Amino acid sequence: MEEKDVLLQKVDEYFLKAKAASAVFSQLDQQQTDAIVKAVYEAGFKNRIRLAKMAAEETGLGKWEDKVIKNAVATQFVYEDIKDQKTVGVIHEDHVSGITEIAQPMGPILAIIPVTNPTSTVMFKILIALKTRNPIIVSPSKKARKCSCEAARICYEAALGMDAPENCIQWVEDTSRETTQAMMTHKSLSLILATGGTGLVKSAYSSGTPTLGVGAGNVPVFIDKTADIPFAVEQICISKLFDNGTICASEQAIVAEKSIAARVEEEFRRRKACFLTAEQVKLLEKVVFDGEKKLMNADIVGQTAMTIAKKAGLDVPPDTQLLIAPLKGVGDEYPISSEILAPVLAYYIAEDFEDAVNICIDLNYHGGIGHTASMFSNDDENIKQFSMLMNAGRIVVNTPSAQGAVGGIYNMLSPSLTLGCGTGGKNITTDNVTAKNLLNIQRIARRRENQRLEKFDKSLYFDESLDAGAIEKIYNRNF
Amino acid sequence: MFKTEQKDGKLILCFEGRMDTAACAGIEKEVDGQVGKAGQPVVFDLRNVDFVSSAFLRFCISAAKKTGAGKFQVANAAPQIKKVFKIAGMDQLLSVQE
Image 1 (cartoon, rainbow over the protein chains, first blue to last red):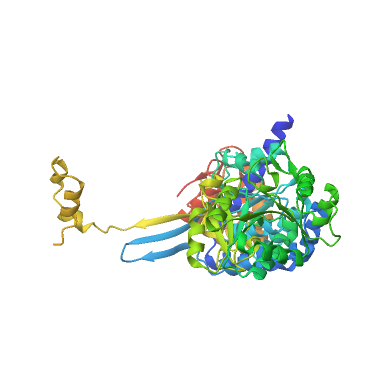
Image 2 (image 1 turned 90 degrees about the vertical axis):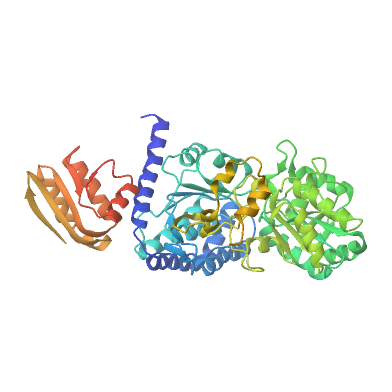
């Protein structure tokens, strides 16, 4: 048998098992489903520290302590959010409209896992898949294969302990491009949950299988003159330094109004941020950005500020936590105005509110359409105006953006590690993807006749002298 | 958990109740033995079955392999059980009768 046939046979086996799991799953009721989800949550939560250490060691990215928090969010917070949701059978009934909604599972889901959140994303996707009675196949990043597979294995064991269908969770040890491609295009696959780089997400969307994907971020954070400045700066540091900046919803550029810029800079300096000179910015650009690929350099993702400063040959204070690059513009000629998933921030001083919003629009449209925008302000009108001008699924306010966008900690967004970016990010939703996105909702539509149409003389449709306004008036006549 | 009978030159295995993992584990050897020595078409009658587990689906695949093409049937499945075989993609391997 040729190599390709062996690969296809293996992929077929995954789906034969997944389909059988799907079939058995379809018989489970809400109570049985919830018991499985609870057991999996508890097992994932119990292993949060071991998995975080495994992930940090295997990938060399971020901080294990922050990965513990990510694992806790992916299990505890997600579980809290979904545990009481109805996801089996009749989930809504409206006797007035006569509509009854029935939740049906979608079928086998392929979960593409990023290197940046390799265990938390696995547990998150497994929980929402099981809650909706969908079998899931975990496809890890090749740089995080061991820890992602281990997270899946832990969840599977716990699920089986509660009589979950065999093979309701599977994981792929072979992370080759060919296998992933064969998986994504398999006829028995129902949905791809694609979290990862732009190339992979695009490939998922191009597979012909329905896909819930994500887009790249380039999050601007606007500090307006009404903001509590020390608080704003503290919050930005909490976010940008979390797991060394690996969360795609973390801030990428600070935009401050001129009248408050000096205070903003002072607060950042107090928190061990280093504002770079123009020469230092040039040196940093070469290290953090790949000019040919027009993307951040993968080697610096999730590294500390000092590691990056050393690589760039920057002479900065030895306790520097954050590198800040003051820039005059946005675009390809300013590489640090792009997304950099590390403790590096671009910095802009704006003349006034309008100028600041314009800079934020440029940043938002420079590789981050549909993702997330952030604002620190105490003026609700400014917040609304800013929000309406951003193309972002989430506009987080007075919040650390990385943790805020993920939901459940600083706001009531659904806790999620898959942040939809809408059509701007080439996604079908702007939701924080969660269990409700993994259901086929059927609607029983009982006969409820349209009383106005019954009274309406349909022959009027054939009278060309009547325009839309005239018809509307007759149609809506109050008898 | 199951009874056997001979009918029209076929071996009929009539199962009853929930065919969950534990129930299947208890009858696995016996079912396997009956199907293995049958030497004739085999029918699994699911008239009185209201749940099938992954283990039971494996019984079906195994029985289909042992009896040979066209000689294995699943019969009298209730609609909710018939749908299970549809979702599993096993309706192509097996003849599901209502």
